[in-house]
Amino acid sequence: MKASSPYTARVHQPFPRLPVGHSRELLPSDAGTRAESSLVDGTEGVACCIEEMSLEPDRESSCASDKLIEHEPEKKGTNEMLSSELPKPIAEGGRTGKQRDASAIRWAPINIPLRRRLQTLVVLFHTLCMALSVSLFFFLFAIPIFWPLLVPYMLYCMYSTSSTSGDLSHRSPFLRSLSVWDLFATYFPARLHRSQNLIATRKYIFGYHPHGIISMGAFAAFCTESLGFANLFPGIENTLLTLDSNFRIPIYRDYALAMGLASVSKESCENLLSKGGINNEGMGRAITIVIGGARESLNAQPGTLRLVLKRRKGFVKMAFRTGADLVPVLGFGENDLYDQVQPDEYPNIYRLQLLVKKLLGFTIPLFHARGIFNYDMGLMPYRRPMNIVVGRPILVEQNLDPGQEQIDHVHEQYVQELERIWNMWKNEYAPYRKEELVFVR
Image (cartoon, rainbow, N blue to C red):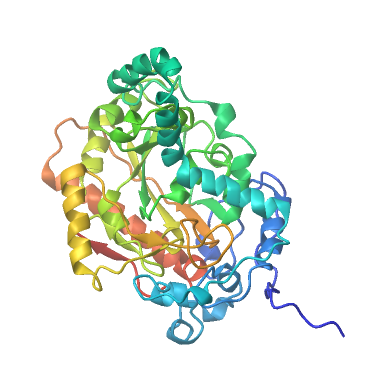
C-alpha cells in the first residue's frame, strides 16, 4: 500500500461548491453552521485553492489554512481548542523577535501547480507595487533622455488634484475586473458576505475593520471585482480611500487611481459623496475608510481583533455632513495574515513606531510571514482565509451642525453593529481566536 505523503492535508469539504456568480445574504439562522460564500470567482477557483493547500505541510508556525478549514462546528471557539489545537502562528505569533534557527526554515516543494504560482505572483506584485514604482521611476530618471518627460510629470504629481476632486474619470472598470484579481482572492482565499441589501438611492460610508498590516481584505473587496461587490450591491459605486501622500508617489499614483482609490482627506470625502451618482449629488456612491488607520496596524496580531475606534468619530461627522449612511465591515482573518513584533516584548520599538506615526502620519510595522519559496520568512502573507462581512446600514440624516450627543449616539450604534457581526460570526470565521473583540483608544 502506497505510503501517504507528508504534504497531504486533511480537508473535509471545507467550502461548498457554488455556481459562478452565486451570492446570498447572511441570515441569523446561518450562525454556527458553515455559511455559503458570496465569492463570485467561480467554483473552479475555490476548488483549486483547496486542492493546492494540500501541498503545504502540516506545521506549527506557518500557514494554518488547512487547520482553519478543518474545525468541527460544535468545537468552535472553545477554551479546550484554544489550548490544544490552536496552530502556533495564531497562538504565539510565530517566532517573531526570537532567535531563529536557519535550519528550521521549511522550503516549499518544487512541484507546485502553475495556478498556485500565479496566485503568489499576483499577491507579490500587490505587496511590492509601491516599491517597484519608486524603483522604476528612479531608474528612468537616471537616463537623461527621459528628463524632458519626467520633470513635467513630477510637477503634475505634486499639484494634481485627481485624488481629491471626486471625479472618477481615472477609474478603470477593465483593470478592476481583470481575472488576475481572482488569483489574488483565491490565494487566501477571501470571500465577501453581506448582511442585507443596500438600496442604490442612498449614499454610504463603509468602515472597514481591522486595518491589519496592508489591508489585503479591503483591497480585494472594494478595489477589485474578484469578490463580486457589484453583484452583491448593484448600483453602488464604492471608492476605497487611502493616505493622500500615496498619490505623490510617481507611477504608483496612476495605478492607484486606475484601481479606483482616492484620498482619505476631508475634501475628498465630501467631493465623492456630493458629486456624481444617479442625481449628480452623490446618491448611489459609497466610500470605504479603514477607520483604525496606521495606529491600528500596530495592534495587528494573529488571533486578536483590537480596534482603534473609541475616539474615532470624524467619520460619523462626515456622515452627518453628507447625509451618508454608515455601514460597518468586519474583515475576519485580516490580522492573521502576518506575524508582528509584540509591543509588550519590545516597548521601545513600539514607542518609536508611535513617534513616527505622530511625525509622519504613517508608521512601519515590523512584520514577517512567509516567503515565495519557504513557509517561515518573508513579506508574503500567509495563506489563511479571510471573510469580509458587510453589516447592516445605520441611517444618518444630513445635519451640517450635529451636536455631540447626536454624534455619540450614532457612534454607539455603529459599535453595536460591529459587536453584532462579531458575536454572530466569530465561531464560524474566527474559531481559533485568542481573545474576544476589544475596542482600544
